[in-house]
Structure formats: structure tokens, C-alpha cells
Image (tube, rainbow, N blue to C red; front, top):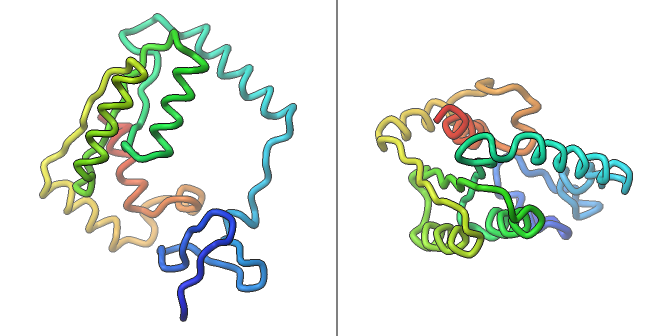
Length: 164
């Protein structure tokens, strides 16, 4: 089977779990994506505003933010601090064993730019790799909904972050 690339988001069919419709040229995420209506978006933003107003200032940090050091999480951190400059943010970069030195450098730069604190979460490599290996060998470690956008290995990373 030849490699296909989504014409909208550029995800590749070589990535496990990514299916490209040959007729439309779109991946299953782009085919099923429905943007929020302006009313829904407004409602969500109001909920976020309310949460920040109600809970900010209660602890050392208002937000614990997952920062990979890549363009998506870096931009989102930047936008968060543009929209809510009063928030005290702890940006956590999980060293999953595959994090490049450039991603670490960029994450630290973004924390400087946004005046956020940086924390690198590390786990003993053998424990981490054993956990990843078990996730890769399983077929039902996480419910189907959790695997809609992420593999079992990705879900393991998020679980580790949430537990630490």
C-alpha cells in the first residue's frame, strides 16, 4: 500500500491508526471534524473565564500546562498568556525518552517569553521503556474513546503526567 497524506492536515497513512480516504484525500479526523458554532465557542470561553476568575490565585500556580517544545504547544502557551496574562503557569515538559535537545531549548525559551515556570518531568529510563513496551503490546489498555486521537503509548505519557 502506498503512503497517503491528508490534503488538509498532512497526517500520513504511515502513522499507525491514521486512515486516509482515497476518494476525498482526507484523514478520518478531518472528515469527521465539526467546528464549534460561534455560540458554542463563546460558551466555552465564558466557562474558561469563569474558571480562571474563580480559581486563580489560590495556589502557587493557576495552570499546569503540558509543553512539548513543539510549535503547537508553544503557540498555545503563548496565546494563553496573551489572553490571560495574570495566570501563573507551570509548564511541564515530559521527557519521554524521545525529546530532542531543540525541543527542550525551545520549551525553555517559550517559558522565558511567557514568564512561565519550566519543569522537566523525568522518569528512570528502564521503567519508562518497560511501561511503553507493555502499552505497545496491549490492545485494550485504554478505552476506545481515549484511543481516538492517541495511541496507548501516548495515553501512557498523559497518565504519567497526570499522576506526577
